[in-house]
Length: 125
Image 1 (spheres, rainbow, N blue to C red):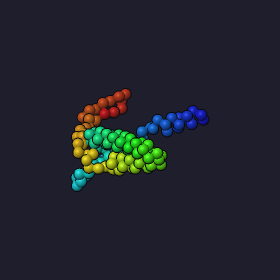
Image 2: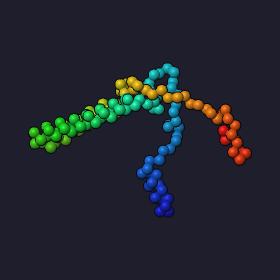
Image 3: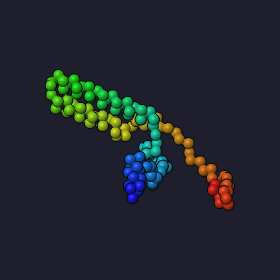
Image 4: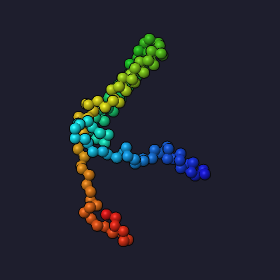
């Protein structure tokens, strides 16, 4: 029983990847140019990472300086919270400028139709 509990805790902590219908890539509809979840723009991800780092750092520095000058911890916290909210609004939504350079992935290749592979009398390919 302890082993089963330990295994459940390990699965929860390690974040096991489960394949379900939502995680499978879907074909892009012909009538739209909106990116689907499996489209990647690594330059957009780099930009979002840089923006979040710069905005949070600037908000922290400004909050510290203003709070120190005013000797008000509450003002420091409010400025830091406002900077965090601004960062959230800039980085989290899927703005179009984050998808300017989508990667062109190779199409799915079905190799199993070309080969007849038998392993111990069972067809595997």
